[in-house]
Picture 1 (spheres, rainbow, N blue to C red):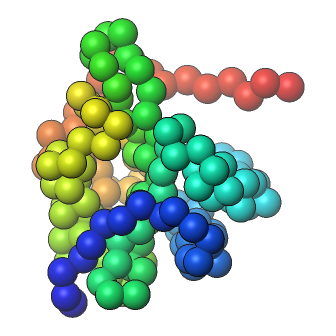
Picture 2: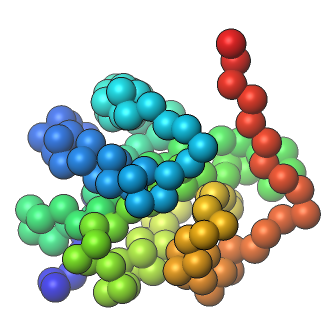
Length: 151
């Protein structure tokens, strides 16, 4: 595989491919519930509002091997922007080739949104991903991340 480039998705040219990968992510590592009909709105929103988040494509030439959703938010505790990696996905045939590790190196070097820290979630059963994240310095915090959907 040639060198992977990480670039922000700024138009709809690759929307179909990203939607397919989003579906693959949630079929391989399903959360309690997810509504795939919301996926197109995520892409539309990030392209229309790049200061609110972005989709980064992982590609060599025109072949897309994965993507990540990046969402910034200010943290009083960290004294700056935390960049939340809401989703990260690498297609099956491109896994275990260092793409994920290279992506986090890219984030460290480029500091999107002037981030001072990264955050992410990982499913308890996704042992390989957890191993990668911990090798990169991610640690379980003493708090729990809770969510509550508005009615």
